[in-house]
Length: 128
Image 1 (cartoon, helix red, strand yellow):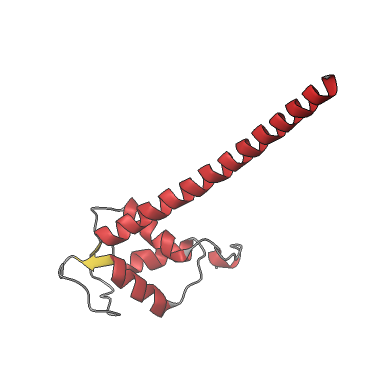
Image 2 (cartoon, one colour):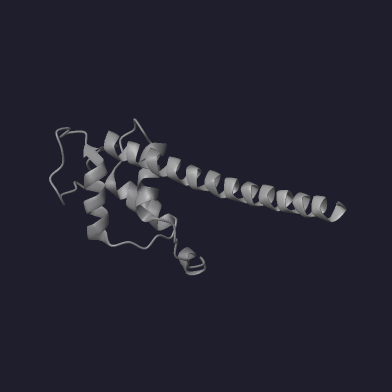
């Protein structure tokens, strides 16, 4: 009944990025698939169970079978660890976001510099 009063929202952030972030937050600690599902539910993500299992199996490895998971097969109680591939993909995503933000800032500064230069040029012409 407590969930009845909870505001229903849908999280629009990228589901897969959140899964990788959760893995990074718990790096070195075993993670169960149901923990990820619970976290996503708590954060109001909507997801397709099949797609989530496929992605989870790609970026997390079962501690009991470190040579790799069977595609599409997730042991609900297995202990999984974030693979290096998933971790480095997340780092690349973070770097890309930072580069885009930096590029946007640089564009604003360049625009401001051009505006100041144009105003200075006009002022020098007018003063002649």
